[in-house]
Amino acid sequence: MITSKIITNGILKAIGFLVIVSLFLYFLYQIQSVLIYLLVAFVLTLIGNPILDFFKRRLKFNHIFATIATLLIFILLIAGFIMMFIPLILSQGENLSLLNTAEIEKNTLQLINQIAAFLESHNIDSSKMLKEANITSKINFNFIPNFLNSILSTISSFGVGLGSVLFITFFFLKDRLLFIKSAKKLIPDTYEDQILNSLEKINHLLSRYFIGLLIQLFIVFLLYIIVLIIFGVPNALVIAFLCAVLNIIPYIGPLIASVLAAILTMISNLGSDFQTEILPTTIYVLIGFWIVQVIDNNLSQPIIFSKSVSSHPLEIFLVILIAGFLFGILGMVIAVPLYTIIKVIGKEFFPENKVIQLLTKDI
Image (cartoon, rainbow, N blue to C red; front, side, top):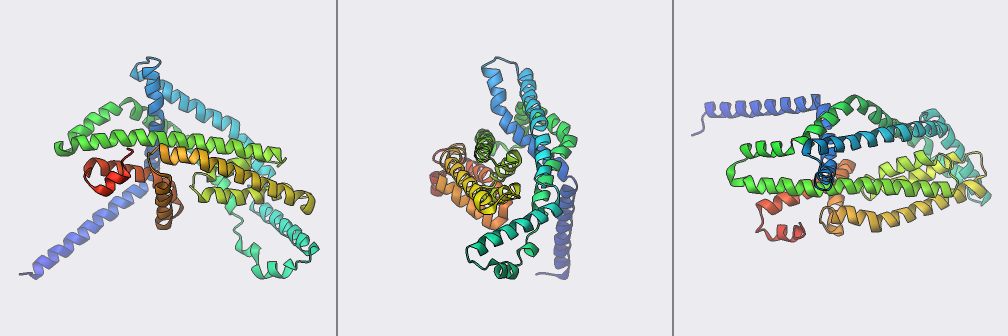
């Protein structure tokens, strides 16, 4: 028989549980910087594991020297990136007025007026259409400077946490066997083999994925620069950098990058004749970017999104699409790594399931 005391106890337990969960979430929110450091260090560790193994197996380094050598490579790459690219991106961003919202709005209005004049010269009444659309009031001109400044500020503020990230990464690399031994003590004996096998496979697959992703972004960045230089677009570095960063977002990122490249190309050439210079150059750049995307979609992405995580291209496409509908852009970015983890765990714990056997036959 349910009494008022039982109901009261149940309500109190539910309230207590909600309070504990709320406090835990609040605690995670307060230490979000530490969580980000741990996540970055984890990704660096996944990238660094193959390098560490190379130093140990091929060059016969002992474990501690291999760890130090791997960390030195990360430090040199980060230092080289900051010294070579950040000053150039800052200077070109200023030349392109990407750090000034008012200047972007002014340039965009000037560009719209040139487009309107071009359309009217071809007997198309654009003034009424542009006025009714009221484009300038709908465009958030803070998008580009905020995007660029967020990248630069993240890199610059990362300097504060860089020491922490490298420190954590060092011990992740150095003591990975110790972590495995410690995990064995915490893992129930019944599931020890499955969990350890899952961790090993996840580490292997995600290491390949993140290394491949870095290579893909670098290749796309170089190809974008080549396209922009061929057609004489000023500020090629910063435009290529922004568009390459957008390629982190699967499928949608390249489309956004093409639109952004077209807008920035037109803004970069303001002062030139729209019909004879700005419009043809923009069309050529778009064609060049689409060719880059064809190369990327048919060479880079299948290798990274399919072979590196042992999944079919259609399978990856559907996973990214579903993640995008459910969780937006962030879901699309983390879809492949998260799906890979779920597949590995599924294979280890439910190997007899027909669906899991079908999805994990190549793992």
